Image (cartoon, rainbow, N blue to C red; front, side, top):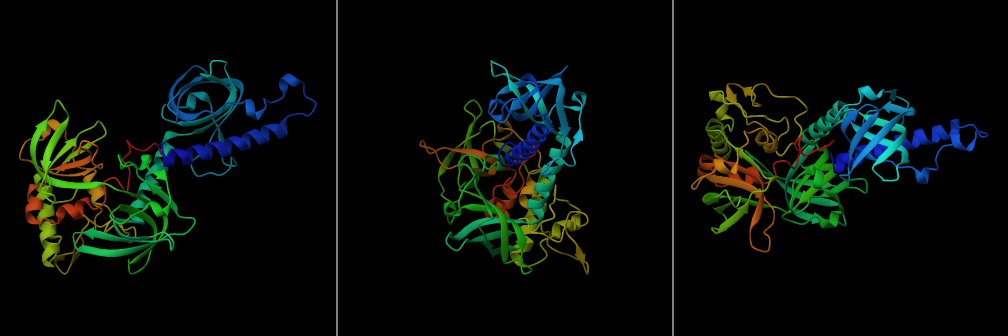
Length: 418
């Protein structure tokens, strides 16, 4: 994971390594000859990274800093497997080098070679990729079940409170976020909504107009959340028809429906383009119409149209008690469909991927983008096409669907290394 989750894994590995180091030192005989005594800790290398390859008695790591290090496993090397979240090695199990696989997380401790590119390992701690993936999924699920997100309407760093407007098919409501000194505060880069790129920050960096996601304990009435963690950022939401597409330059120009002005949008290798299938678009149209009129916003369910990847959480990811609704997430009551409580990120992240070549003049798109650069251009973070009918049915749809960046609540598997 390479930002927050990787830091968590690295810290866990380092803590475990310290335990190995201290236990090794205690086990050393006081009168042992000099050559048998452990190397001074200050002289040891401690590379942390992901296994790139395993050949013979050598494990090749790509460190979290991007370097490549060869770790040599000796007969005397102590190798153990632990799982994320463990604070000591009491439950660690012995591991053999043939059990180490590409993608596993490793912390090696040993004597560095003169070239700095290899280490003769004294000890190795391994977290299996499957264990790390399971922890990642648990964290994503927790953000969905105990999280909420929206636009910051007020921020008071002195009192530790934030107020956000949370949008859903049913309308907008206000939630007050309460923080403490123990609340983890992160801030997105101006050029990314990947959770990995969010940095530790302070509450005074959060401003009205920012987009924010928080997780913690939600009050019974849904109006207050005691936050364990928040992440915020300043991004642009754009929606409008495409004026021109330039595949060679990897750009497109759209007329923003809010400003009524053309905006040049750059498409980078990290930009995600998604396509809403017509059937799903019609389902969303019916839900928006239902929500706007006060009627059953789940009318689309009558035609059996399931939303892709419907999330459990409602109104920006709030918990519905951890129960996954049957079918597409709507429940029936007396023959009438009740409004589904879905997190747009969860739903939209599972849409079919598209490319710039799939877009053409006249298509209507929505996008979350970076702030404008010095030339006035923006870089798309996520773009959604196939939204013509949705915007025609409800001009406010773009605010509801784009109020919070689509991967704010749950980073994609590709974007996380925990």
